[in-house]
Amino acid sequence: MSMTRRPELVNASDACHAENRQEEGAPVRVEEIVGIRMREHREARDMTQEQLGEELGYFLGNAWSRQAVSSAEKGKRAFTAAELLTIADSLGITCADLLRPPPSLREIEMPSGWYLTPAALREEVEVDYPPIVAELITLLGKDHYRAQEALVAATKNLETLAAHLPSAEASPQESDHVEREPSAKERGARSGVH
Image 1 (cartoon, one colour):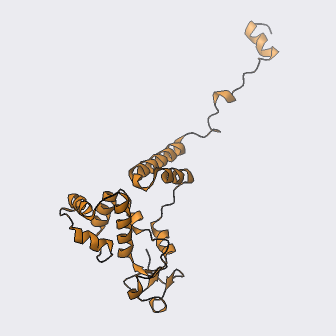
Image 2 (spheres, one colour):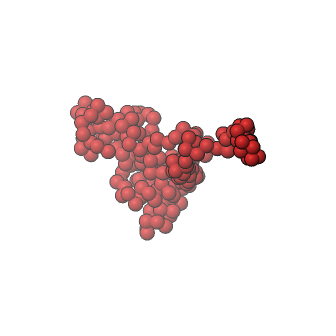
Image 3 (cartoon, helix red, strand yellow):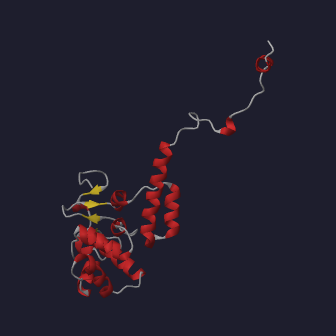
C-alpha cells in the first residue's frame, strides 16, 4: 500500500489522538484491527484463547499463552507475516479477513503519524471476484475460505480453458450445416447423363 499523500489520508494533527481510541469510531492501529478480527473469529468458532494459542503453536513452533493471545486481540503487539498466515489459517479465514476494518472505524493510525481511511484499507485488502463467485462465497460463509479458494481457482481454470476453445465462427457446429439437394446438373453427372 502506497503511503503517499492522497485524498484518503488525513494529517495526524487534524485527527483524534491515539489516547481516545476507546471512543466509538476513534482511530486505531492496524494491529488493533487484526486483534478485533482475531477475537471476533475466535469467539465465532467457540475457541478459548488457550485453544487458539495451542493451535498457533503447531505452525509457529511455540504455543502462545492465553496472555499472548489476549495481548494480540487488544492490538498490543505487532505481527509477522508468518503469524498473520497462521492466525488466519487457525481461525479458518484469510489474511484479508484479519485486515478488514470494522464498519464503525473512522481512521486507521499509521506509524508515520498519518491516518488512513477504512475505505483506502478495504481497497487494498478486498478481492474483486466475478459476481457469481462473490455470490457463492457469500453463500458458503467466511469459515469456508478453502472452498472459496478452490472455487476461485476453478473459475480461473474455466476461463483459461474457454480462452483456448476455438471460436464458434472458426468452426461451425454440425447443427449449423445444412444439407442441400444436388442440382439437376449434379444429379445428371452422377448418373452419367450429360
